[in-house]
Length: 375
Ligand code: ADP
Ligand code: MG
Image: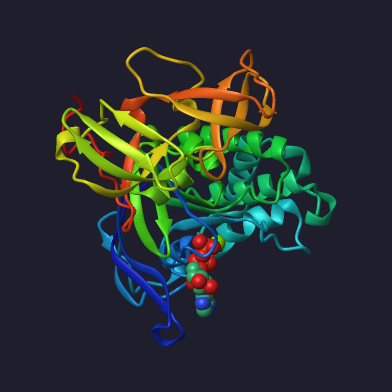
């Protein structure tokens, strides 16, 4: 087991035309489970490949435990990686697939290797498959074998590159839980890459969000959800996504008046999440409000916004109401609240949950209680 530390890690392709990873610094504690998430092409796989030693860094450094491994080959890094496409040897049996790494990298006897493979197979519940070949297995079974092959070596670090993306939704849920159980039992430092924000949020002790090779934010899932550092993170984390409306802010004594661009509404904000309203200067902002923070009711002391219901989407315990306040503006309300399509409704916002982002840079203006304590 070991901590992993990336310092200003950079990877360029095509003589610098492509910056896949842009000076990424990150510390992962010994035994921690960190998820790394971001849209396709943001540099997740490249980051993992550099940590594994499969890709050479352009600059920056990688430490595993006490050792600087930046220039060290993959075989000497004591890392096991699990891929989306399983990467099993098709002509070897499950047993041989799992044993192969041990034969290559250890001096264990045949009997000791068998013991280890059987232990790993029992961890993954695949004892009965040891003599099968990969093409006889389902996708879920193949991924269990790939996981078994990773744990049999008892590495210092696990790297997972979208290992569940090829599985159907139900199996994915089961395997998420299995991987978490495995990680807890073995206590091995794990870096888990996915493009699926829900997977990242539910699995990680800590979530790291990348965009265009750059670190956007890292933190506990709930912190990131509640305090996105910028509009991108606000929109990326959470489903349905945070709603965004372009507004003009007009400070007016104790009230911050928000006029939606296009004149759809005027909303007087009386409370703010973190930054005192008086510190927010006049200008253009993007208002961000999560679907669960939009209420379908008149509430005393709150301004209201009138809207037309465009779509009603029942999702079991809740309804998603698409409102004409902005593009894809959704209010998440209880199943009992079901206005008809085309009807007019009045909504209010949970003001302490409303965020303002700089209209140009997208950086949060009201996001972080670390800057100013919540009132
Ligand atoms: P992700 O795993 O987040 O989808 P990748 O790390 O695979 O992203 O890719 C990051 C960026 O680097 C992308 O723009 C991708 O096209 C580019 N890239 C990755 N590998 C190579 C390569 N071998 N040669 C050139 N460009 C590459
Ligand atoms: Mg990838």
